[in-house]
Image (cartoon, rainbow, N blue to C red):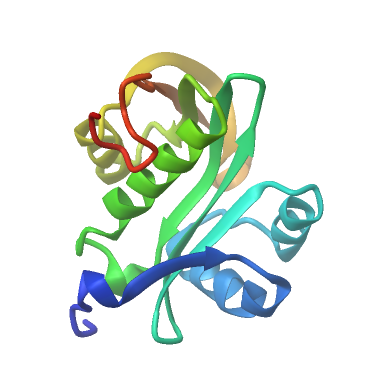
Length: 166
């Protein structure tokens, strides 16, 4: 296990092509069915909101979100396995929430594997609610598919762009 890093040392910065090697390495360690390098390059190319969370030059995590008309869809949020359970996911969700508000979004949406109990707990603790089920949404092992739980978070118009109430 790595040393716990000071949250004050962490910063979000735009994901660039320079980060892709490290991002893909984390993605491979974190998931049984990881995104490909092409998924990341495509996300950057179309202008999705792609951020990395770093302390010094250590990649702690990243997220990718797609803006819609009055909503934002979280496509990928990942904390490096060696830095999990240190509060980084809620920090990234708060940053995403703040950015979404600045974009005029009223809702945040995401899908999560039904079997990913840890992620479900993090999302629920951060205000997301289960609103649906997508049958066979994710690839699984032996040519099977896994259901996705659809979750949403209603953004409060009284919140500031930093996630707190005004």
